[in-house]
Amino acid sequence: SGQSFPHHEGRRRFIGDLRAVDPRSPILSVLGWGAALGPIFESQIFRQKFVFVASAELTAELCDESRFCKALPPAIVALRHYAGDGLFTAYNDEPNWQLAHELLAPAFTKPAMRSYHPTMLGTAGELFDYWDRRGGPVDVSRDMTKLTMETLSRTAFSHDFGSFRTAQTHPFVGAMIRALQTSRRKGALLTAPGGRLVGRFLDRRNASAQAYVDGVLDELIAERAGTDDRSDLLGIMLGVAHPETGQRLSPENIRRQILTFLVAGHETTSGALSFTLYYLSRNPECLARARREADEILGTDPAAMPTFEQVAKFRYIRRALDEALRIWPTVPAFARGPRADTTLGGRYRMRPQDWAVIMLGLVHRDPAVWDNPEVYDPDRFLPANVRKRPAHSYKPFGTGARACIGRQFALHEAVLVLAALLHRYDLTADPDYDLSVDERLTMVPRGFELALTRRHHSE
Ligand code: HEM
Image 1 (cartoon, rainbow, N blue to C red):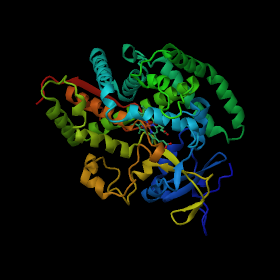
Image 2 (cartoon, rainbow, N blue to C red; image 1 turned 90 degrees about the horizontal axis):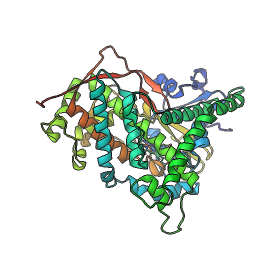
Image 3 (cartoon, rainbow, N blue to C red; image 1 turned 30 degrees about the vertical axis):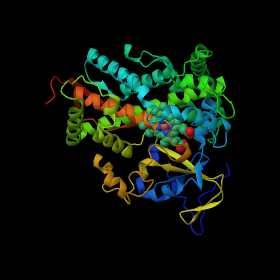
Image 4 (cartoon, rainbow, N blue to C red; image 1 turned 135 degrees about the vertical axis):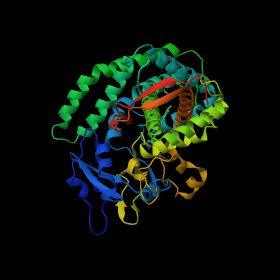
C-alpha cells in the first residue's frame, strides 16, 4: 500500500509490531492494549500497516474538516464488493455520495422521525408481545437485533421480515450478515501470505448467500418501481430526482443503499440498546432513576407507550444511552486522512494517501478527558458537564460531512424502546454474567440474558 505514516523527526514508533493482532477480532485486540501504547501507535496485521489514534487531543485535530476527511481503510474497502458507492462505503468524491446524501438527508431529520414513530412503537409492541408469549430469560443482543432489523426494514422499505413469529433469525438477515462478515474477513486477509487465494475461496463460498441477498433486494425494488409512494426511504430513492440536475439513483445504487441502511442501521442500534441494558442492570441506582423517569412521563399504566413528543423528554434515559456508547461505541472506529500534506500533533507528517484509525473505545476513555473512565455514570452527559469537555471528545456517530446520517433515527428508536421497556418490566440479570463482547461488523454483548417480569402497578 506504500503507507508509512507515522514518520516524525527522531524516533519512529514500531511498538505495535511486537504485538499480535488477532485478525478475526482486530478491534478487541487493540482495545486490549489499552492506553499503554500512547496517543498514537502503529501496528501491522499481516502486511498491512495501521496507525491507531487513542487520544482525544489527536482525535479533535483529525475531526477538523478543513484539514482532514473520511478515509477508507482496507476493511471498509472490502465492503465495497457489496455496498459499492453506497453512502457508507463511497469515496468522498464519488458523485453518488453527494447525490444520495442530498436526496436522503430530509428523510433523516428530527421532524422526519415523527412519520416513523408509529412504526417504531408497533415494532416495539410486537417484541414485548413476543416476550410475554415466550416467557423465560431473554437473549438481549439477539432480540434487540430482531427489533432494530424489523424497525429499519419497515420504516425504510415497508417490508416485514416476520422476526417475531419465530425464534430463529430470518434467513435473509443471516445471509446478509454472513456475506458482509466474510467480506470484512477477506479484507483483513488480503495482505496475508496466500491471502488472495483464501479470498477467492471465501468469495465462492459466499457467492450463493450474496446472490440470495441481492435477489431479495432486487425484487423489493422491482415491486415498487413505477409506483409513486414516497412514504419510506425506498420510495424517496425511486421517486425523487435532484431539484437542479434532475439526476436519480440507479436501481443498482438503490440496492447498495438498502444494503447499507440495513447493515449500518440495525446491529449498531441493537448493540447500543444491549449495552445500555447491561449497564443499567449492573447499576441499580441508575436503573432506579431511569425507571422513575419512565414512570413520571408515562404514568401509571405499565403498558403505556411514549408519544412522539414524550421521547425527547426522557433526559436521563438518553444520558444512560450516551454513556453506554461512550464505554462501548458500537461502531468502534472510523478513519481519517489529510486533504493535503500536513503534520498531525505537531510531529507526525501525513500525506493524502495516509490515514489514521480513531479508536473510539480508547478515545472515550482517555484519562485526560474522563475521570474514572471505566465507571458507568450517565451524569457525565448532563449539559453542564458536556460543556466542560473539549470539543470532539465524544464521537460515537463519527464526524463532519460523513458522520452518521441515521443518528436521529437510532436515538429516537433506542430511547423510545428503553423507556417503554423499563416502564413495562422488572429486569434481573444473571449476577454471574461477565460482559463479553462479540466483534462482528459492530460490537455487541455476547450471551447477555435478562429475566423480564411484567409490572402490574407503577409505584
Ligand atoms: C455512518 C455510527 C445508526 C446509517 C456512521 C459513522 C458512524 C456511525 C461512526 C461514520 C463512519 C465513518 O466515518 O467511516 C452509528 C451508530 C449507530 C448508527 C453508533 C447507532 C447507535 C445508524 C442508523 C442508520 C445509519 C440507524 C440508518 C438508518 C449510516 C450511514 C452512514 C453512517 C448511511 C454513512 C454516512 C455517509 O458517509 O454519508 N454511523 N450509526 N446509522 N451511518 Fe450510522
